[in-house]
Image 1: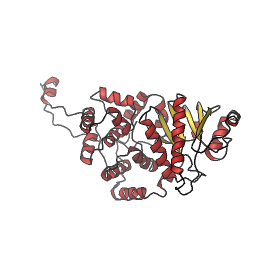
Image 2: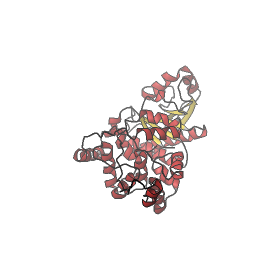
Image 3: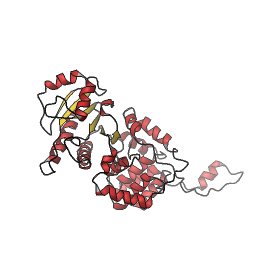
Image 4: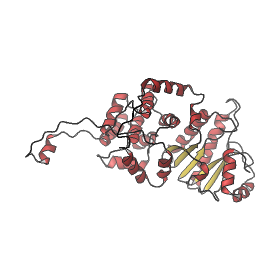
Length: 351
């Protein structure tokens, strides 16, 4: 299952478990902690009293009570002291231990806030990196749908030299024009969301409006005569390699396992199976982009794969400019790319 970044009130998310950025007492506090206790009702506080607190980096679970989530997993993040007091290791443990408990409880989905990035002062960008590192390490060995829930997407832009470089690249390359076919890809995305089932609906609901439109693939010249049958026409045309064919060929050429590819692409296993079994499957642009990223294709092959699916990179779309920036830099980390896309209000890559 993929990792998704969404902007939403964590107390309203319908999933198996939500994570509470708690204090050591587990008896409620400010920020996310207080909001979760208020939404869950007094039953949560009564159960938390029986847990007798929690150490930094550890996690404990309770029922969800009046929340839409079945469980609340409480974890205590570290206070930021400059970064040289073991903060990263402790924060990593918060995510690691929470995911371990969720697995023990049989959860198929879990939502995290950005732990410690509020009153505890952990820098948002660095806290996000720790979250992604811990979650992706877990997902390489496990199947679970994981949400990172944030309120302030602009916080990603603060204090990061990477984003100043991205902004400069956007300023130099972005052409602020909208194509008439802006929503041409929406039906395909809806089909993929429906295929993935109910758990994908939440991600579909909270991502930004799609910036992806189909670009017509180069047309082959088609011989035609009034009396020529369709079979004769098809026989005379060399059918080009499909997106699915190219994807599978590139996986083999790279010496990758299927699971390695779809996890690097942040794609659900079921969707990959559907693409593998159907040579004529037409993916959404965000899915095609995700696989090109996972395969770490240079820009010419990157564009070739997009054309197979009927798309292209365009400087008329800010999302495409951002992705092009990462490809040219040789950075194929899809979660770092998604972080940038989220910060700029663009649609994320993956399923």
